[in-house]
Image 1 (cartoon, rainbow, N blue to C red):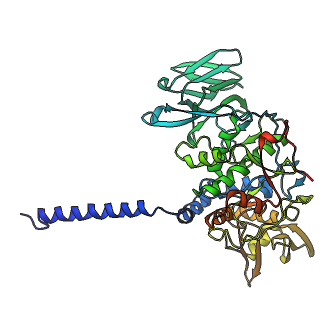
Image 2 (cartoon, rainbow, N blue to C red):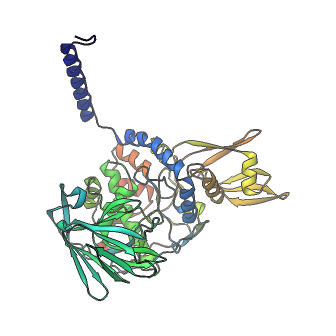
Image 3 (cartoon, helix red, strand yellow):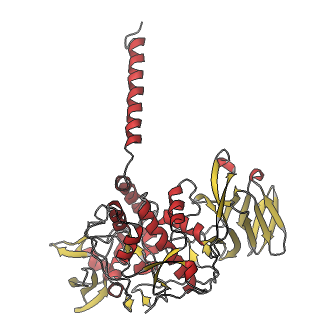
Length: 506
C-alpha cells in the first residue's frame, strides 16, 4: 500500500466533513440573517459595483437633480423619488419632463391559478396571481436607461398575441418558443422575426391573457417578466416599449425595486408611498405617451419579481391605500437614509412649504444604514481646479443642519453656489458615493478639504432605513407613515372621486 491515509481513515474524514456541513446548514436554517445583517453583507459589493459605474451614475444623478439619490443597484440599497416639475416646488438642479394619463377607478376581486413558464424556466411551475383590472392603468416606459435596438420576446405564462396596426396577428404559446424584435435597419419600423419569417410594422401591440406574462430578454439586463400589455414603436433608432400595467401589479414590482428588506411593516410602508407617488405622477405628467419611466427618474420598476412573494404580499395587504392631505393626493417623496433627521421641503428645494413635508427627528432609527455616517476627503488643489475657485470661505446650513450653499472665492470675490450643485459635480468626478447628501460638516487641513457627513439622499419625506428601524421596534406601517408625513391621512383610491386626482399643492 502507498504511504498516506488508510481507507478507513479516509472514510472517517469524509463522514466528519459531511456531518460538519449538515450542522452548519442547520444553524443557518435556524438563524437566518436579519435585514440588517443582509444589508451589511451587501454593502461592500454595492460599493464595488458603484466604482465600476460611477461616471454613468453621476450623470444620471445630475439629470435627476436633488430629488434622486441612490446606489447603483436599487435591489441593494433603497433610495428616493424624483419631484415632478409642476409639484408646486422646483428643484435647484435640472428639471425632468413628465407625461400624462387619465386612469379610471374600480377595484375588484382577484382569482388564482397556476401557469407554466417557458424557455430555460419551462420546468418550473410558478403561482401566478390573476387580477381583475383595478381600473387604474399606468403607462411605463421600459428600459429607459438601456434603450435597446433589439431583444427577444417570449410568453412568460399563458399566451401572447402580437398585433400590428393593420390587424395582422402573431400568437405565441408556451411551447412556441420566442421571437426576435428589432429596429428594421434603415427604417422607423419594428421587425418581428419568427422561424426565419419577418414581419414589419411601425407599431406593434402585445397582449397577455388574464394572469399571464410576457418575457423580454434585454441584451444587457437579461430576462425580465411583465404583466399587462405593451406598445412597441421606434424612437431615435431604438425600440420604445410602453408597458400598460395595472396599478397594483406596478406597486408590487416597485416595492422590490426600491426596498430590499423583508420586514413586512417596512414593505407595507413602501407599497403605500410607491402607490401614492405613481398616482401623483400620472396626474401631473404632460403628454409624451407614458406616465413613468422604469428607472430612477420615476421609480425603479423591474417587472414581475416572481421569486419574491413578500413584495406582492405587502401590496395586497395595502391594496388601494394612498397618502392624502384633506382628501388630496400628497407628494410622497422618500430617500434612503436621513442621518437622524429629515428636512422641510422649502429648505431643500425652492417653492412653497408643504405641511406634510416637515423636518422630523427620528432619534437614530436609521443608524443601521451603511450610509448613516461617512466621510470624504479631496485635495484642495483638485477641488479648486474642478470649480475654478481659489478657496472655500464657509458653508450655509438650514435648520436641520443640511448645507444649503458654499461660500467660495472666485476671481478675488466671494460667490455662493448651491450645495447640491457642488455635490453632484463631485459625485460625477469621484463616484456617486462621494458626497452622499448635503448633511455634512466641513473641516480642512493644510492640503485637504474633509467632509464628515450623514445619510444618503435629499432628506425629505420617508427615510427608508428609518422605517425599517421603527418597524423593528414594533411600529405599524400606519404609524410610520404618519410620523414621516406629518398630518397625512391614509385613504383608499375609491374615495378620491373622479380622475384626474386632486393634488395637495399649496
